[in-house]
Length: 416
Image (tube, rainbow, N blue to C red):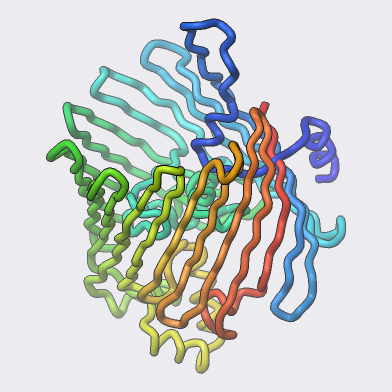
């Protein structure tokens, strides 16, 4: 592990994580020839280093270091054929070398065949993301078990850096619409946290399929319907819709419904309380002329615990409470019924290439809160950032029960 870390350190000077848009911008080379469009590289590679400290709830301090190598490859290698590969290696250390560990995440690896312009087939490990909401996605049915190495509280980072699922996917396109069908088979029984394991047990531990249909109804309205099913569960119906209220404001709604056990029953491997359970995210995003974007989102999870049951579980059944929290974290779901989510992103703050991002997750059932702030500066191939995070709330609340009270870290990222 130490040898790997040394090799990565020698590979390049690292720098900070950013959103996918700035990732692409950082790789574009200036073109000295007028009227000539530079061809995008098939490769996107960066090295990232992070160092910081975590104040534990008991008052102790942990000093954290991380070195990451992220590789993405996307190439059309023959007429109608395309290969996609994405992998991330994270080397982590806390306080001393004895607490060093690594985790490799095979995010995507698949072949794509364009049988004809309106018909495509994909086979392999694919990160199938669905949903229009920013903070909580009820129709993102393939997120469960995909968070092998979570390095940021930012939801965009978590969606991009997670494991894909092994699947066969077909996409049919027509004017103003599309139909996607995919099948993801069972490939393993249990997760495997070994550094180099592909971990099919986290993403492909049951048979699953999904159908999604999109059709443009007007210039600004293109709804999407989804139908999803997994082994031993009833089908789930999903819906996504965005709409432009005015030139500066976008409204969105994301909804899922179907018969299912509660999250608590799933955590305890029971199915004795199956019922129709709605999940919902709806919100507004407002963008100003000076590149400030503000999002407010309401979140509802009908499979989570209501306020009284959540309080009672923490007071009266601590082992079950701990088991429930572990299950919800793996499923990347909400433990309780209602929450609010706020996100702000401001590009070119005061000076060019300086960006600020802020996020708040507020649990309406136990009044706990996660707050996150990032300041990031971008050069042509390098980025630097400072990130701060606070978890606050009661001792057994969603965020107050976290052993991490405050996190501060510096990050550097360099693109090749």
